Image 1: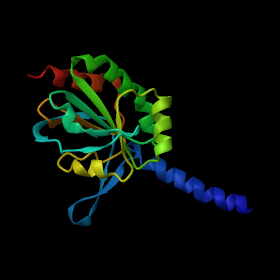
Image 2 (image 1 turned 45 degrees about the vertical axis):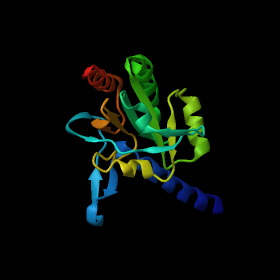
Image 3 (image 1 turned 135 degrees about the horizontal axis):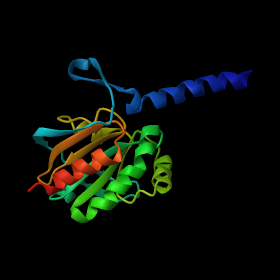
Amino acid sequence: MNRHVLTVPALVLLAGALTGCAGAGAVQNGPGGEARYVAGNGVSEVIKDRKPAPAVQGTTLDGRPLKLAEFQGKITVVNFWASWCAPCRAEAPTMQKVYDETKASGVQFVGVDIKDGKDNAQAFLRTFKVTYPSLYDQAGQIALAFRDIPPNAVPSTLVIDRQGNVAARAIGSVSYSPLRDIVTRLAAEK
């Protein structure tokens, strides 16, 4: 009987973690503390009124320091993910494929592992053979730095143009063609 009592809370926690992924939406507190619902549908939007990306820096999952400013002059795709997030696992091969196909044209991918355990995150990178760097952001501070164009959910993807401005955003899991199209379009900008 005690075994069932322990199992039910574990299932409730698992269900809560899964609904925290963007596929089921997310709740974010706005200014003044009000909660707002953000649905993640994976639709990418190109931003017309671009604002500078924040000066993000941190430590990668393999222990190296990394600053987004290092990639100034490149298209930089910033993907917010977590090992516990099913849509993140679904999109990981797409992220790696688009990175492999576009890196020669001046495109850099950077993952941001958010609210996750380091061992689980490192296992995720090995499982999906992710070769681009991922910042470890257990506390979620990097996501908070993007206040002007917030990622709002896990997974989320922001694309920074060559001038260092946030140029596109996708809330939720992205698929190959839309991601590749946006990255290619931004890479072709002068």
